[in-house]
Amino acid sequence: MEINELIDLYVLENRKRIQFESEHKQAIANMSHDLRTPLTSILGYLQMAEKSDLSEAERKELLSIAYKRAKRLDVLLNEFFELSVIESADDLLNMERISLKNVITEVLISFYDRFQQKKLEPTIHLPETDGFILADEEAVTRVLENLFSNAVAHSDGNLSITLQEEHAKVKLIVSNDAFALTEQDVALMFDRFYMADQSRTGKSTGLGLSIAKSFMEKMNGTISAQYHDGQLSIICEWKALE
Image 1 (cartoon, rainbow, N blue to C red):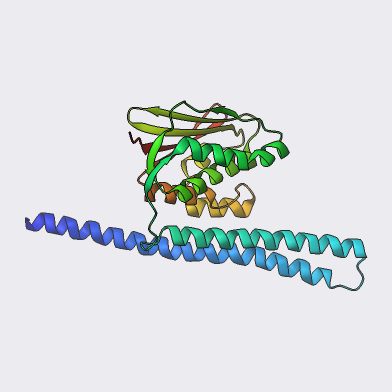
Image 2: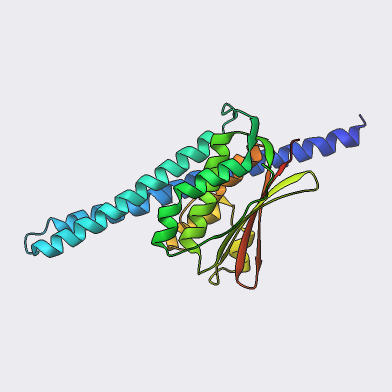
């Protein structure tokens, strides 16, 4: 290898190291802020609830808000932990031949009550073929749950779930109306830092899509988002098996 190539390789590796260290510091800062904000809020509501001049109704209201914030903090803790476990090099998936169609069907059944509560009647397109892929069934289930949860939480109306098999690829498309989104939201939809920041403003449910992306990458699949005429489409792709 020539000296110039060695220098270029060194520079590239050094940039990667600096970027990793920067992202690591940013992740710690974001996690600290994400956890401290709801904790501070919980403590504030509990302190107000301790005041002696409150009516019983006012005290219950404050305790109810504190409980909801505590549940939100619990969700954040679980999401951060799950993301760190997924991205650990020691986290090995059980890759096997599975039917994506069957997994989708099972997860859809488990979401029936949530669809009913939101008065959503998803349009479902499943092919006759099974859509066999090489993947970890639990990881695929988690990806689907996160995608469907995101659609239920943010859908402004229509929701469609489509499974396609073409060009040696198995493709899942989850589409829903989402008129409040911006192009920036879609471009950064799977970024953990952006999703955590949006969670603080109430525009996001948290790190679900970042977790889905990490799972997809671990399974050698891809996940992407498209936005057109107020409709968000999230696309997952795997290599098809015979």
